[in-house]
Length: 110
Image (cartoon, rainbow, N blue to C red; front, side, top):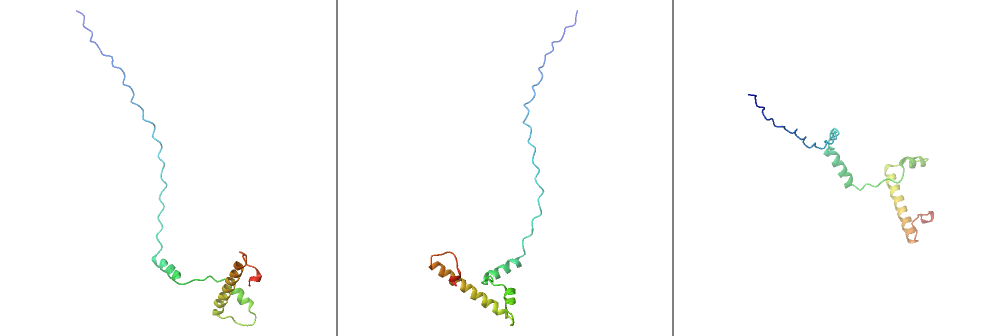
């Protein structure tokens, strides 16, 4: 008798799994910079002291004032007094210009 052939099942090849979309290249984060230390509290106290005092900017130049004086010495209090005088003269001139309907200071306002 002739040997029987065994029936073999043909197996279909497995379908390839759906390919996932290629992953986007992750951007490398920039290295973190060292954080700067906060300013010491002493510096903050200095600024509050300055804020407490009424600081008026000097309009006049001390050096130029001293050079303008020919035969006398100049006291340190003189600069503050001269500055106050100049500030008051400017504010008076400003008031006169506004009363005349102008926004520009002119020599006649002094």
